[in-house]
Image 1 (cartoon, rainbow, N blue to C red):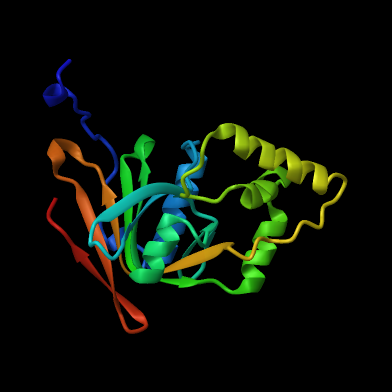
Image 2 (cartoon, rainbow, N blue to C red):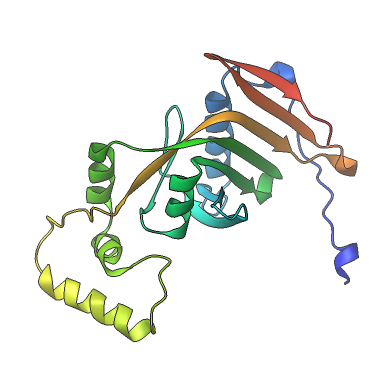
Length: 211
């Protein structure tokens, strides 16, 4: 089958203004809970796009680890994404839940989360993930995998039998505080539902966008 002929007809329930929550965070939690119930693989996986000094966007997948007044994820503060955020503190997120033919798009400014929040999440991670944060110089060029695995082995030996592994000072969380959140629901004949929440002070305006 040619790429031009590859398509899926979206036959799903719609998203009407009368059914949408007043808050995009309530609406997001509703859809997220439905994605979990539908056993969507890794429903907290999201694409994050950032832009650096050169004006060129870059995107990659990360995992959502918290939702409050923003969307929280964790990374190495010396990684490419972090460097771009420090240069241009705005980002965009996309969640895609294929089984329900849904997307959520988030745009907003980014802030570093409180140290205590990063410490608490780091302490909750599996041992291997905590050591991995020390072993990896994320986004940096390395000679090969052997050196990375040796670094991990050294750390496993150094912290053998211990649980009190400190958080690397260069590793922690970011929070994306949205000014717009769009909920996209696939519909037949490509006449999709698109409701966009736009922040207006402490409130949100809901616009319907043409598909």
